[in-house]
Length: 216
Image 1 (cartoon, rainbow, N blue to C red):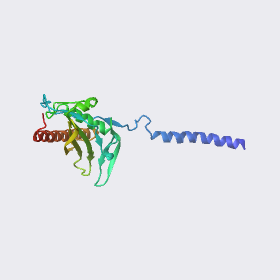
Image 2 (cartoon, rainbow, N blue to C red):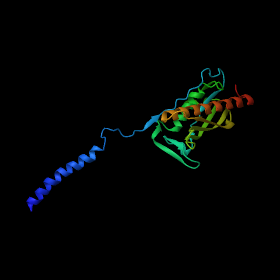
Image 3 (cartoon, helix red, strand yellow):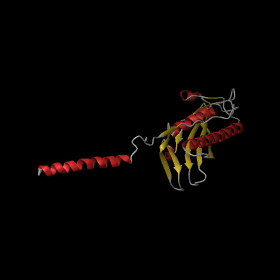
Image 4 (cartoon, rainbow, N blue to C red):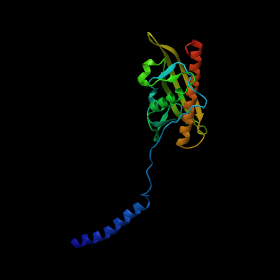
C-alpha cells in the first residue's frame, strides 16, 4: 500500500507543477492594477479684471453641494433618471472645497467688490455671498456630445446695523462640451463651465448692486 501511495505522489507532484505553471502563464504579474486618479479644478479669471478700490467688501459663506454630487467620485448622468459615480476618477478634495476655492479665486479679483474678506473677519464684510452647487456632473446621454454641467444657486445679503438683510437670490448655470477623451478633458470642461457660471453670477450681482444703489 505504501508503495502505491509513493507512486501516486510521484505522479501527482509533476502534475501540480504543470497545473500551477499553466495558470501562471496567462497572468502578467507585473501589470499594475488600475489606480484612482485625483484632480483639482483650476479656475482662472480672464486677465484685466481687478477689484474696485473703495468698493464694498465681500465674504463667502460655507458652500453647499447637492447630496448627489457631494462625493469625491466624478458623477455622470447616463440617462434621464440615473447618475453614476466613477470609482477611478475623483476630486482631490470634496466638491464643496473645489467650488469654494474656485469662488474665492474668482471673487478676490471681482470688479463688483472692493475685496474679499476672509472667514475669520466675515462679520466686518459689507456683503455675504452664500453658494450652493445644485449640479456638478458630466452629461453622457448623447454619446457624440458629452458636456460638463454646473448650476450655482446664490444668495447675497448686506450688513446693516440691525443685522444682515437679503439683497437678492439668483441662479447661474453653464454647460461646456468635452472636447477630448479621458479624465483630464472632462476636468478641463468642468473648469470652463464653473468659470462661466461664476462669471454670469458676478455680472448679475454687479447689476443688482448698481440698480439698488448699494455698490459703494
